[in-house]
Length: 272
Image 1 (cartoon, rainbow, N blue to C red):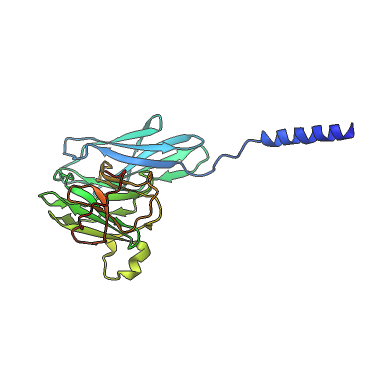
Image 2: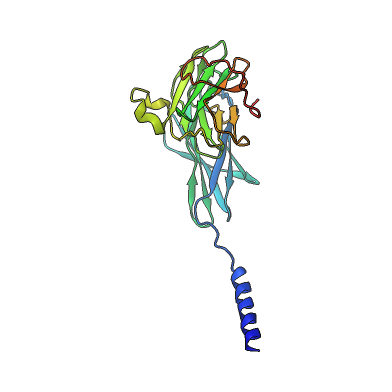
């Protein structure tokens, strides 16, 4: 009888332990997919800023904060549609530079803040259709962009995310232009010491491995996708570079940092 009673007590204790509720994560909310619309802003356009905000508890409030020409910050309360929050920046004068970010407060009192974005009113509409991710190498640890178009492409504000568009950018371009046919070479911070003369502005702040699946996404300043190198479904160690042929298909080829790729027939299935 004592053995039966002891076993019953153990069973009850185990059941009670299993029913203890796990503590929820205490920390700030996650802010991702920060975008603005329209992408080319004229003096007559109010600009809608949107972001995805998620939290295991609940989001108490979200605020869009913006400044005009480097002035003091102004705030707009954002409205929610599911996890997507939006707010509107009023129309601004010609040539005005607007900088903004999103802040989210959750029920535990934690404040999350997104990265800053900016736009210039009446800026020249940029055609990014000729801009491509051209080569990625996890052995030498570099990425390369290529202008395959026929016109200059201003790159200011163009950015790269690694592994997920929810991540903070690993690289944001400064005020530079990529001429037709020109390449832009970016090295990982992991090998920055091996390239002491390479400009700091052309260093991306992440590693890059030839043995791990990876996703590299190229975005325009408004947050719209320009190019997407998605290797997450392909488990294969890269023998050389992931390199784009002239037909724009990805293949394995010898590394050619900052120069035209070598044509290859070793196509990477799943990247076409």
